[in-house]
Image (cartoon, rainbow, N blue to C red):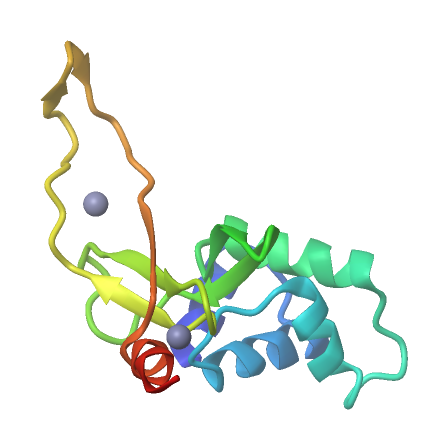
Length: 143
Ligand SMILES: [Zn+2]
Ligand SMILES: [Zn+2]
């Protein structure tokens, strides 16, 4: 949370009560949150919180690297907190449970800047993995 706020400041984004509230929702959540889910949670604190404003804030937070965008979950974009608490340089990718939205992490990655792939020199990459988490898998087999 403190690291996230620091990152926000460094990117020149104002720390508004809403952004602070959004970040605390994400840090309390082990699952990815969609804009609608964020709205539901913020409604309890703010009388006025429209979805367009939530979208804008989530996008701004994703642009400065506090949140990571996750595509295709429930056909709607969702977001999760980037965890900076360990080490800034630690490279990892997210794996998301397609059943409950839980976020896991993958530290093995074969791609790195400057490597050659099919004649291309790699400058960046985006990887998102989807799966079934252990707890969802075990409730599946109980049925
Ligand atoms: Zn799950
Ligand atoms: Zn990677």
